[in-house]
Length: 283
Image 1 (tube, rainbow, N blue to C red):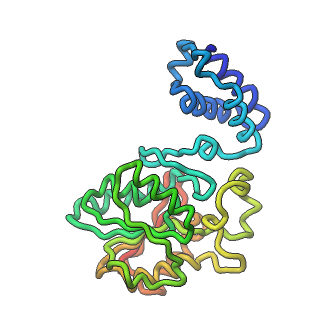
Image 2 (image 1 turned 90 degrees about the horizontal axis):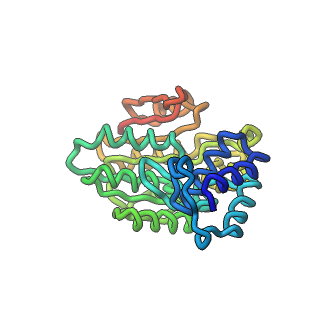
């Protein structure tokens, strides 16, 4: 089977749902996953041996893509900060904006000799695992309310060969008193209100876990920032830092909240798309 012919077949099927460029990108990801082929292999017209070509398997993946299931869930993996993470419908797909959060923490703290770090709402574990890879001096813990999300995170930590202490906890039902005091608390919490659903893409709404996306119905959009900040004030060491990823529309509101709670050195940072995305502060 000629790889270029399969590539063109995938694009022709997906073009009914996806724009041409996106269909091409998805086709490349599928061919790499199924046959370890890269773009240059298509240019060369590399042949796929008949024994490796599984038409039924390819059709099954295409059927899932045709109903807008995210390619990351279809492939069972996503890349984040140069690392490959297992993902499924129990965890959010890691976003590029969160890579910027991780990069900021690494750049600002890599010179320190020892760190206790806590990630709240860890999902796939992309934040603490990436930090563990580049902050070798850090003792890193992560928590989540979801048992199934923690199972994914634990699997990722094992495959990426880092040591993370995971905890199944509800931050509204704990004081963290049985855990250490922290130098850093980081979180990318749920921050989308249910009113914002109308602006969201169908593949996100239909497939990604709502518990990780949305604040509870009728709750203040800042509910998680407020609770995590209160825990930070109790459990961060003196001068410790809290880092948040935020809703791009809530930069001023989160800044005012952290100020009222008594945090200091508050910084609101824009992402590469020039949107308010990260807030960090000190106790």
